[in-house]
Length: 458
Image (cartoon, rainbow, N blue to C red; front, top):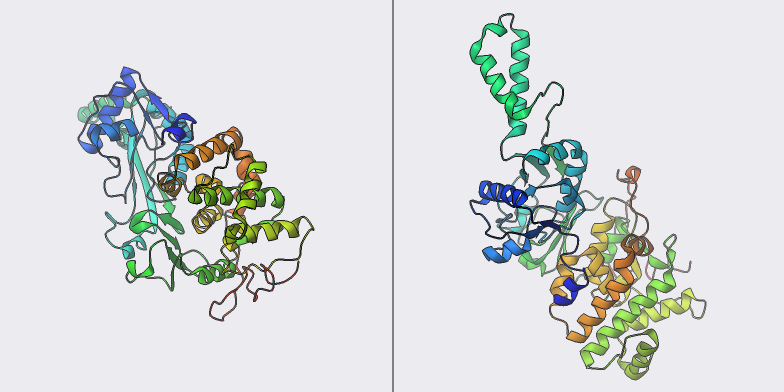
């Protein structure tokens, strides 16, 4: 992973912890949550306060998330909201933590100025031992306080003040007054500067989890389903009507269509379909050349074109399908026949706008694994897993490409590929039309038997 780290593509934007005061605060929180302390004098932390250096020191990369179900966190600064989240077990965790910090930023800023804040993402289960338990997680509640208990003490002091004001002889109650003074020394004047950090609850409707090889759970859609990276036999009995794995390409295509979750890249508003298709073709060529031991030089498009000529009839079907689509886009060819059985099919799609956009693009990345750029952007856990098995040549090509083409303008690249970020008014789910009743067959994503890749001519 050294290439990725050196180019800022892994462990980038972590928060440095090097001052003795912050190290001491972190240790207090670490002792409080795990019973352990670090001997390191400087290290880096992610959004949740997890440090890869401390993980190496402990030989425990999940020291803040031992069961995977209820992630603990340590906040030294509100700047952590800009940091990545490492070792993700649920796709919703980053969004939940980021929203918690943003909605309580003023309070957290004041609290972290005097102490460290620690808390937990509490689901409705304590551990996930079977796939069926994933469906019991409906909500995640975030609770946090300083290690010194400032929030709890402020709440207690506010109650005592109310009692003091309500009781006519409250000023004569020495025990009450003494307790109020003691708490006020710790919390400050809560009547002028209130301290409040209420628990926040987030719905856990649709999500990906790294448990059991990787599972996508969609409950808040018209047609609920679970999609597993491993065979469906590994899931056992789960409380959802439709269960699929990645070998069920036709079923997944039909399900995506009926829930109106995807759109063709060539019909997406604002997308430069030609440029996107060409880049996907480049990635596929690099992968094919790497597997066959063919040198690609500096992997410029002119070099890759020579590789394509050399491969000839051995060109991957994914490449041929996208090439046919590109010819149609540029007006140089007929409408291609790409059904859900075609290996190129999922490479031609992207998620529709909406609150599940990133989750659907994450699923599409796994269904089109040679598109390394989409996988890096939408599913870093899977990207790092795949990266570890590549040759040095492919690792170098991908790391250089991402550093050159993506890192310099992350937001621009994401918008070019997936469209603008969802607006607040798009986060409420619209009523979805009901799809066809017939059993899934070979189809395009808009539900009709595929004459062309989307059921007919545009």
